[in-house]
Image 1 (cartoon, rainbow, N blue to C red):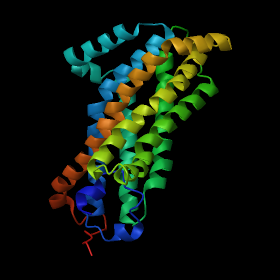
Image 2 (image 1 turned 120 degrees about the vertical axis):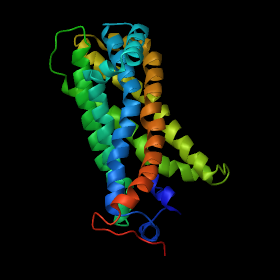
Image 3 (image 1 turned 135 degrees about the horizontal axis):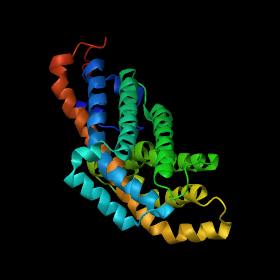
Image 4 (image 1 turned 90 degrees about the vertical axis):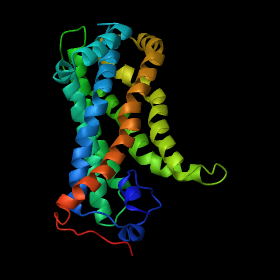
Length: 290
């Protein structure tokens, strides 16, 4: 295994500590610098489209705007007035989520690899905690910003549902790909490693959105329509399910599919850029392959 593969998260579960100890990689300072910069840069690429979709879903669920009108308004502002868009609170909130999630997962993985331990469990615990916390914070703000009712505290059950939804996404984005990919590479599928990695990175987070969409809609309905009956909630979720699920798939593609791939490639590229300038910093020298 070479430097590129070890820096391309996610790390496969089959890679044990003994194998990690034999890998050649840049110094800890180089890797951490690459982790932070790649996380911030990738977030700048993926956050705009996700912010537009998230605002559209919540505005549509509250009845403030139709799904199509909200999407058109967001796209118009992004392409005609990009600087204005980047200053919007809706974008800043989403950017904070991705910047925090990517940076946390990148740095945790680097620190684990540097200590020759598998990063799968630490990434799940820390990455999911960061992502779920930031997403719940963002969704609470969005729900209040784009609702048709007077701002009020978000019900605790809505926070819990948001957390459940985001845990499902984080699990399929950062934990399941390294576990499912080896299954695709084995008999009877025999999918090439690179293809299996990419398929898992894109497909798994998207597929889970069809299961988490009702959870998302229920959490919003509890805020917007606190007095609705169970039957009314089920009817509302059923009527908005396919539109919500489809848009959540499209928001997942840039955030955890394309964004995950871009983040990995950025880390590899930045290690090459930073190595001549930063190697030797961080107290850890380059480990040579045994």
